[in-house]
Image (tube, rainbow, N blue to C red; front, side):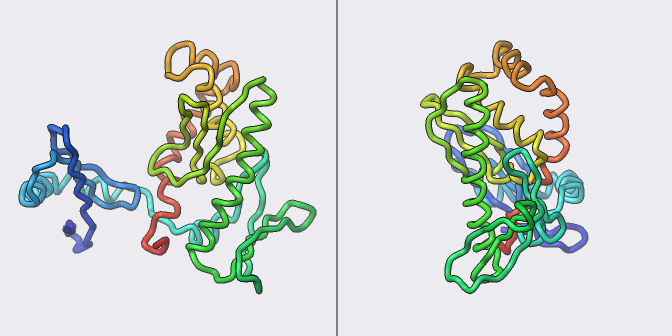
Length: 240
């Protein structure tokens, strides 16, 4: 199903039928598609009617939504990645090897991503590998400084979350943390480490996080301004 805008643009419609849902809701997804969250037995015709009723609102949301970038496009425009509290220039090169890998050049200032083919799938896999290597080290660094112990660490492709912490003390981080500034990347890590002591967002949690990051409020505001844009990186049709 597609939604055709007044300008003639065809936008995919993703219908999410959920048991227990009582209301029909439209939103714009991270690929700038229309997302219809509806009760389980809702017909396609009902969704079409809802979209027609909300046409003006949808077009306004689509026109203001940030652009969707493939990772290749993003790194061509912003050739930098954050790791270990620093920002590295990034260079992408073809490799004679069958597998992708990365090295550091120019005294460690440049991260070289070497790919068997300059394609989105190879680049995303390598960046995720680098993210896991880098973020494990950064989380270990902060946890040691704070006298904390975490369980496992995973790096994933979450749709909207920057990170999470489980009851088993496992931390999961979005690979897009590499696209943040060092201060914001550390803020996300400290946020999840604070959950090791407070598995909620109570006053005690925020007080603890203020202790870990005295600029917490500033960092939250900065993150709110850029999250919608960065969450759309690596989600274009080129990533399939």
